Amino acid sequence: MKRTVINPWTWQEALGFVHGNKIEDANNIFFLAGQTASDENGHCLHPGDMVKQIDKVLENIDTILAQGSMDFTHVVRLNIFTVDMPGILAAHDHMTASLAKRGCKHAGCLLGVTALASPNALVEMEVTAAK
Image (cartoon, rainbow, N blue to C red):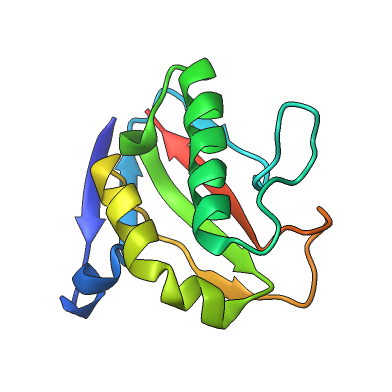
């Protein structure tokens, strides 16, 4: 697979994302369902704690990517949904550092929504990866 990062500007670098990932000759494309801070039984963990929920969501994504023989370096799109925009913005530096540590260079969006399907979930992340 050949990935070309498309960034016509530089302001996004401080926010930890890229404007585009052009993928050529991918052998595998992996679409992950939206992930919340759930345990192995689907119960939401860490109600009210954005940082701990972000950490658990990323851990869950790590697990799924690994089972698909990929990791965060293969993530080309990461969409983030939250019911608490001020909370996620306050935790943004933590989230950006966690993604950078994993080698993630994603395009995507951050959306404020009125509800998520999982009760007590503050954040949900949806990933597309390519290899």
